Amino acid sequence: MTPTESTSGRRYGKRVRGRTTLAVLLAVAALLAAGCADATPESATKKPGVAFSPVAQDENSGIVVWVDATRQPAVDAYKKAHPDAKIEVVTYSGGAGGSTDLQTKIKLFDRTGKGWPDVAWPGIQDPSWATTGKTPYAAPISDLLPKGTLDKYAAGAHDLCTVNGKVYCLRNDLAQNMLWYNKKLMDKFGYAVPTTWEEWSELGLKVAKEHPGYLVGEIGSAGSVNTYFWGSRCPMSSVTDDKKLTVDMHDPKCTRMATMLDDLLAAGALGKVNKFDTGFVKDQADKVLMMPGSSWFGKVLFQNTYKIPDGQIAAAKPLKFADDDKIYTGAGGGGMWFVSSHSKNLKLATDFVQWVTQDPAYTASADTYPAYKPAAEGWLTAQQSSGYFAGDIAPALTSAADSIWTGWKQSTAFSQEKIYGEVVIPAITKGETITSQLDKWETEITNRAKSLGYQVED
Image (cartoon, rainbow, N blue to C red; front, side, top):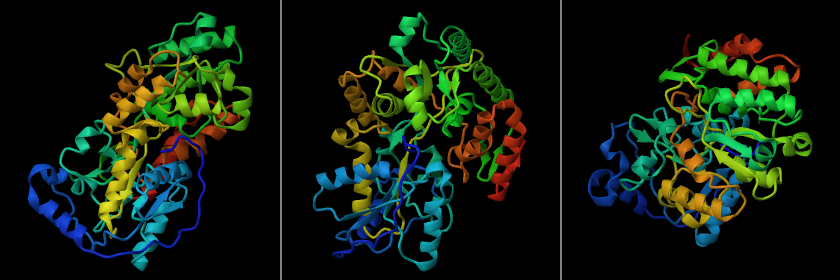
């Protein structure tokens, strides 16, 4: 997922074509047959899935890469580091806002038998269709990587696109949620940083009385559902089987968060407008005392968008509910890469996705927290050395990376963010409570899921 709220699109361009050879096809066949040293494919030790048979390879040909506008610099960086690589880039929505652009195009290409991008930056809902079927669009990246490679990515990072033991994407970044806060303002007001949701709520109500206009969060953007309801372990998207899921918006883990947010809304301590909205940035950005949210908020939101001066923004571990046994958090994004099963240059396509997720020089300067653990270490070092943050943010981010609740299934064929944006945001804009929308919210999720073939359980 992306740290921005919108992307631009362009028409699909013609792919670059070039020299021909079957070297990579033979190499992949050798990989699948070999079972030794670093050439052994990662999936060799996993439960077998759909057999992958690469098309005839032409490792001298170019590749077509589809990205959203935010990922365009990644392609540019790779091309700069690999000037001889033949890469054509096409920008599109990237799945923003629950867009089905990629799926729609791939269905067309499946019918015509041509046009598939060799690499794609998908939306979070795309693994639900791109990793299944007789010939999945996404190639099993676990068949193409040296043994042990996937072990160097964050635990659970590839769960959303693992099918029958094979991994069909390479995770780019995590967007683990924690608590961001303005240390300068907290010190000025004499407030202690909360460690539980209950403390956060209590402090928010206190802020509303003592410092009206200051905010302890924002729920007017679609991604807010991932921060608050995922962090509360609300079972609005709990997949129990391939096409079965549980939807229960009246579960206590949903209602506890809804009630808490309603109280803060009524007090005026939560922003109702999208945090990237021009009006919010102009009138409320400097009034943000605290903001539960993603790892990319520090650089993208507070530094680049809100222009909060150096030495003010700090990070704390994710909030937990007092009754929970440990910290659970959500994620406001976290993207991935697909390599096409139809690609004629798997060597170049695989090298590209590895480089953009692993290269230490490139990933250290990225906006988002890398899923590749060695890269994450370099990224954190770069963040700290920038001098922007008030204190060491590494403990909070690393703790959050290990605390993402896996019971929330991101890769359903529908977008929870889109539903939240259609049902909840209009309601709170009109002054209604979140609690009053739970029945309508549950009905919309259920109907959307059933229309896509899910069996919904209460």
